[in-house]
Length: 206
Image 1 (cartoon, rainbow, N blue to C red):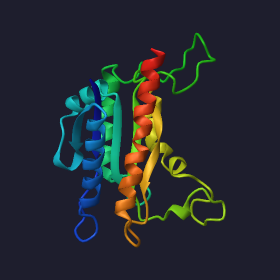
Image 2 (image 1 turned 135 degrees about the vertical axis):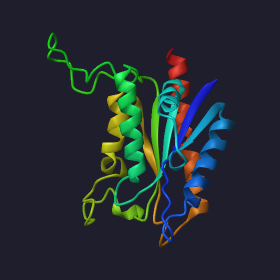
Image 3 (image 1 turned 180 degrees about the horizontal axis):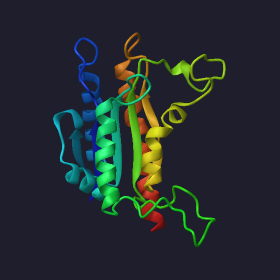
């Protein structure tokens, strides 16, 4: 059976971020993946986690999805702590990577090609205050034409460095001023079909 890991990086802030929307997203992703034949595990970082168990979940999963609010154009700080602990432990055990990919014997090998998570898929699902119009438009003041995936390359690079394939991010935009959650959930369900298509292609090629 295909396996999926959903990591909920929400961090509670009184009067600002209760976590309700991110939980709805997690529940929606879980139901959709289960309907597509996935066995789903969840980690809610704020409730605590066992580092070695998280390493195992990554190794056993075909799909890894991070559900997170965007705080100051990044993930809550508890997620960075999670990554530092889990990825470092996996690296020390030789689980996620063999090296950074380079070799003195073969200088043509590129940095970042030593990953061991090949065949796995990683996807971001984000909740933003930023409106959709702020991205992919060179006339926009802040991001100057950058996409959501461009803005979050520091996150997805962790997984690409370890060999995983990166699925384009999903975003629920403008959730503070003009939320449209019903349509966001419709778009999310449609977006998740990319995982099923990619998995089917992988099985066909194999």
